[in-house]
Image (cartoon, rainbow, N blue to C red; front, side):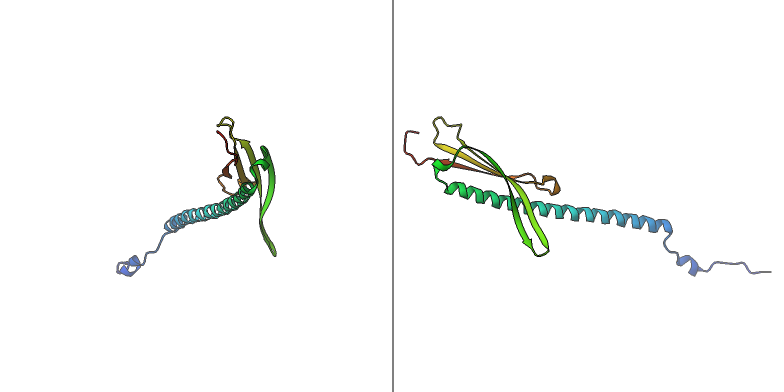
Length: 151
């Protein structure tokens, strides 16, 4: 008579991962990895937009200082539009951006017989859709005449 075959306990204790468990673990790791990649891309885009906003603000402040230095009589009412390139060019790489600068100068309509002008400078990136910018930068300046009167 043959002895009955028995499995040793050693074989039962050495069970490994099944292919299904491995596939599920890899899928979970892939989902977490794609989430981390999307967060990285969002932050890179957000930082590029912040750089654009900082450049736009510097350009708007520069234009506003020019209008502050101009005599009151020299501020002609009207709207002007222009495109300005801002940025640096190092050897081999360029970081220049184009901005639209809109300057509007008007007599304060809220005050009758006003000797006050409203200067509004708006700077927006030309390629708004390429980076997250949240729009343009607008600065407003109120300039008053230095004439003395009953106003």
